[in-house]
Image 1: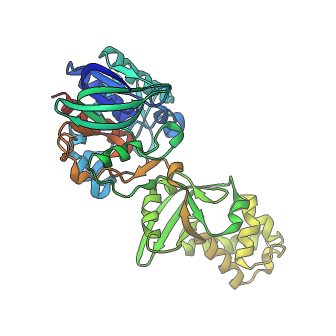
Image 2: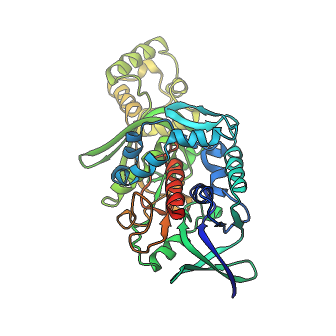
Length: 418
């Protein structure tokens, strides 16, 4: 193993948003900084966020940010206060990148291209003389009298690096193709830290019904969603996309972490889709009666085209137990109510989710109880800092998780430089 004599002030491990921000902030305080990245380029996961458009943050108030992270929100308050969503927007605007606000306060670059965000980060890294080492994976971290020694695996070699401070920003264990393989959790655990159970966040759900495969690719716009677990229920409204194994879509992904927590106690969770959420049951019933009278000679299966995608009709009518070939004027009240009930509560049974590596976000990680929220420094190992997804806690989509990465990276980087 080759040993380098140079002692860096700060070594940041992980070239994602948290790591890049930590490196930039430490270097801004005139510290010698080395950024270590296991891939051959920076920000691989950043480039695919927001379907390649990069939902970089949200315009929500600080209190809303903390609420989005649930029981972990209080821990993040200092980080969000130190480097807020407005600070982050100013950070990118300072390099001439304009941003735009879309639905629910989501913030995107006007270019609709995540490369624009990455290019600004790279510009800051270069401007502040951050040295970057690519294709280097962290094999181990050892505490020394002067700080830390990091053992790195390169493509054809091994090298040992010395530093006074370390920032671990290695990400979670989701989207492994981007380099997030959970390496940081192993290192943190060896250094004495507790890793809370890793769970997928923002992940498509699996359902019990085999016929869902026949609906693969169908998208239902703005439908009501209700998940039930005993007396508890989660309700929302949004687009639903049928997949080969179940359901996906923005709101499904947002609610998935809570649904997964229900599944820890039950084998399956009912999901009811309200296909006509803007109409009350009684109002929809009246409209069906009127439509059936006006179009009395129309076959039921042909009329259903006005209510849902064609491929969904055979499954819907099979579940309703109403003959698809019946004329509308032949359908009795019981049959009409059966159709009405299904329109307002189309049933599915959620049995699980895709594995962690397929999730957008990792929930779980280094216990926040062992990290100083004012500095992101380890309470167990002085000089060791954490930033980004490696820290326990996650939020729904909407720019919240990226802001967490930038805010904790900012705080960790500046604290490590002191």
